[in-house]
Length: 303
Image 1 (cartoon, one colour):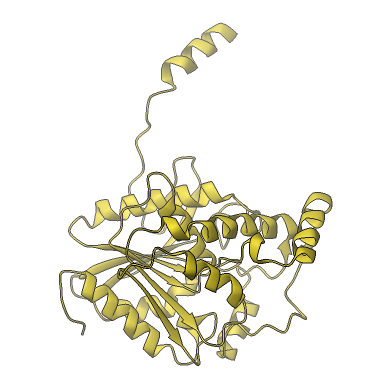
Image 2 (cartoon, rainbow, N blue to C red):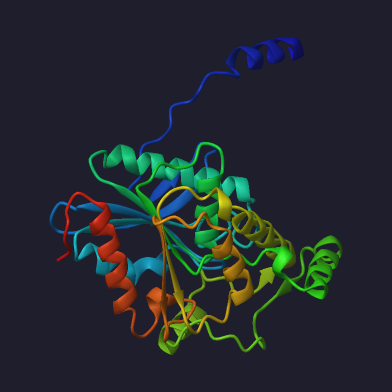
């Protein structure tokens, strides 16, 4: 029986199983994982489609406001819960950079198959921006018209002071299961206090984070920071002038590492915070995002 099993596995190892089509509420990945999927569609045929990736400890509902706003102006928006977040498998556990990249690659391919005549844009918020950057610099990057990044998480180890690096290494190797929270750090991610309170009440938003998940996020940010010179495609990077989550030193190092071509644009908003698209006044960055989508799409103007 053992030899038969070996023979059978050898004979089937190279057979590629058919991939499930894009699901209505969740996407089944190649390994069977179910990633909850949300979508916001315009009433009329869209002129572009956006695949949005949420930030750390958040989930796809993060794009409810921006997704509805863009859909009302002709853009189809998709967002899914990344592994380890929201209602995706193993909430609170870090899935690994390569798994997150592969999920993005696969979902992007399925969306393109669903909308073959529309340009696809990637929208990454904070950690989601780091996943997009890592994916675009990897082998077999997801095909897209351009990427829009909202304060991408690029706080890699080389931009940390040595006590931070040492504390992270020690805790990750001794107490990886220990959970910590951001209480007491006095960081303000947005001026939209009601939105922040709603996140605090949302059971799907992670409030306490495992040390090994923080170490995994830092691995991803290492990759995103190092990807700067490898970014060859069009990028639109949006930052708030009151950013308090990603250190300015890390962001500036990333920006200096870009190839500095005219296809990479940076916009800053003096009164914006880290959660730029969910601040009290997100109209300007949303309008700039919409104009960018329109300028890169078939249709040349926005509603």
